[in-house]
Length: 397
Image (cartoon, rainbow, N blue to C red; front, top):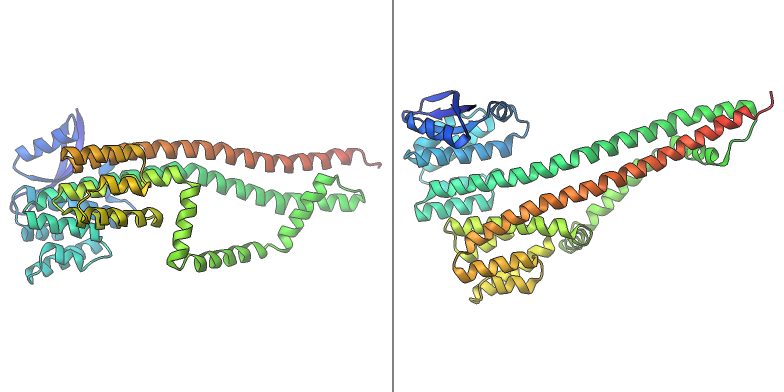
């Protein structure tokens, strides 16, 4: 048995917090529901603490908002009452103002989706489209539950990528600082010593001293070159053609990772929208919006044209040649069996798992290459310094 922290609300809107003992999170939820309260969230104590003091507030608040509205609607509370409760309990000032604004718009006659659409900074077109589909089908609580699952999966994937890159970035920064310290601080002392002794330095040490002198005298060239390079890059990628070429280059450089990432995003979004009752053409248009690579996004336009012509999506997707063959086969099976939404979600799960493995392999390859490079550079510096030290012993005194 484990302890879980929870926050819940009564039917009258009173907020209760505490801990409950259960074997798993689902069991804790069931226990709370049996006591007559509406669970808003249930977390292990450590996660609950991190949730409250998280630095990533906006996205975390949106996920919390979605899950809590879903829980309240599922418990039978009307939308305006649910939003009133959330406005009272929201801990973040910004989110409280957003909820109050949405509630005000609804009371003035707007629908929930229209109220969300007025705040595009927080609620994406995908989010609004799913909410609109839920309103039209009378299944808003179900749609919000699917949105919660979608956001949790996206957050988990993003966190995995972030955590995988922490060590390589730290290694790159510390290695770079070590090189700067050696070249600009330690090596000039050797140059001074040999100048006083009137002896020539060994060739590797001379090369190193020349690099050190150049860095100390013309250090401003490096940031200037970086600024000019960045300005040139931004200018080249300002147009749609430039952005398309850059995305095509990234696809050639990291084709496996980018293809799996975009496949997982597209299939999960499309599957979630179809399951929520969104029409196929509208779902395709919204799913295209989550694809960040313009080469793949352009290919999806052809899929929409094929769907308008009544050809479905499996054949047009195969013709684009942008998705992996396994994903195309699974989509074809889903379309033939009438379970396209289910199969799309399975494709997304498969490629999210595959993406994690691809990132793990990439980081596993990148780390030793970086260590080897740093080792060779630092090794050259150390050998050059040792050659200089040994040559001092040969000087006549």
